[in-house]
Amino acid sequence: MNSPTTPPSAPTPSRAESLIEYPSRFPIKVMGHKVDGLVHAITAIAKEFDPEFDAATIELRESKGGNYLGVTITITATSREQLDELYRTLSTHPMVKVVL
Image 1: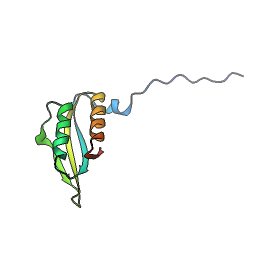
Image 2: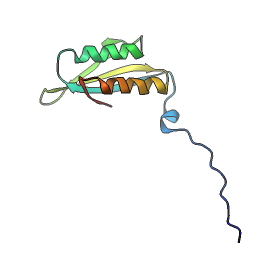
Image 3: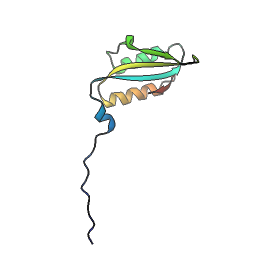
Image 4: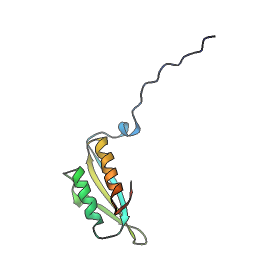
């Protein structure tokens, strides 16, 4: 008895590849304890990955209790590799708790 064969499926692009066109403006939310130097550290990292980053576009949101600070940066994303490395760098910074 012959078993039916299924045709090979075509590779599908990953979700991120199909949704982001490069270059594009890309917001990233970073959260950490509200301490001196947090915004400066995040700004410095953003400028490493996007030399044209404008710190005037940073949005800040304090937590209800005032202990944490949400910092939204919007960078110009040029590649998946750039975004991956930026997330990795932000996530491993000692002042940063969460990167979204």
